[in-house]
Image (cartoon, rainbow over all chains, first blue to last red; front, side, top):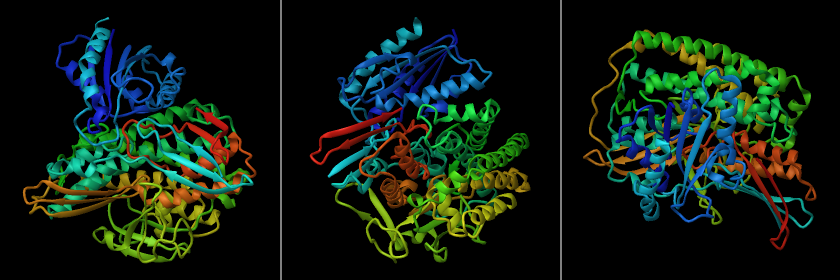
Length: 151
Length: 485
């Protein structure tokens, strides 16, 4: 299945780098039928990146304030409604963009989308260093996403 | 005192907030806007290679990376005391036009347009791009997607990379254009030009031919007479990439015209105790609180600010539309906040025309795209971001490393005006605590017209601004809450 892994985030804003770090790390391994990208985009551009793929895995930071920092959650678009409180995923924009494409585009829209959301602490401070608990969680995130890619 | 909070939840910048305070009779007493601040930018930049600033700053914001990229590049031209070759300036401006095309397109169809195309009182679930598609048809949607992507493709070809450009260097750009690329870009520009005209026609048919909408645009809650600011060329026409900063007064008379290096002499920032947000104002007039009019130093930037601050558009089709807007809305200046939408579309048309001029310029394929740099020092650069005047100010040491960086971003320039527009809309629309979806949306429309960009975060999709509203009673207890997706 043609797959794209997108590490999402801003590498300059402390913990928002987590998705990028996961993508970087997995990109150093060898994969067949898997493309790995780092991106700092949302909505339309994010969906445009996915066109032509059958499976998409996104890794992103999230702040709900309700989970321990470092908690990893596996979310599918169907879960979005329930995770309405997940205020910073910008899920509606993403879903809307996906819907626009499926209504208007002739391209292949991926049917299989999974988002790994890592609860983080700080995405407001300019720094290329993540906070300790997120740094600590990183190997686990990489492992889970690797398993997902292999599944 | 009761308090209503409108809390736009977006991705990283999630905590931008409008708070509306009610008096004892539940009428609006005041309103404030708060925008979250990204911390530590200056410290982050210290000691870094100055040449990295166009890449670093383009990552501050996922919405206007090209604007930051070139404000930074121009600050470096100044810091390294180098004038780019004229071909390089043209390539930069061409790329900039691509950015304006995709950014303005996105705003109109995704963010501002739904209020008009679907209607300000329509259920929030329909008042979005999908509602626009339903009403305007699937072919329009395909065109929107296509031309937004064209704008982005133009910036990617010129910028060397999608989204975050890598082409800007002090003294020029890193890459020239091939004949094949010229051809490809020109085809896209031609198509974008037709699309821009179509979009203005759509605005005409749906908005201007509906008297209710024209009345809404001209209604009191949306009027704000402030000074206006924008870059102008030698003929005082709007320019996004270069020129002098011109300020006109609330009656439309030229008040100031200055090169960006003098911005500190003309613009000061007021700091209020209740927020970390800074409110810029014109020094010569002074800070007179959040008030409008001739005696208040607050000014507006962005599409309407630019059109008001200029004498016209530098291209023929856009100039015609410019004249038509002022004729229709009662002469110059236009102080209606909702006219930002119309002004934005006129700029979209201008960007396609200007891009066409540039791509047809024989010099555009010149290979002389960079001049050698001089000794590093202080540098200030300015561009017109889609949402308004953007200034980067750097101090670079003798080794080419950053000592100091200060940015004045468009939404900050508009901070005072946005706050007042929201306050005035709320005052005009909320009475005796009566608050419903349609009314809330109309308050939000005052805010949305500016196309504000919160704290320049990464993944935000312009077009999405879910709202949470809390109405608290005088004791601070929750009286009513509204939420919409």
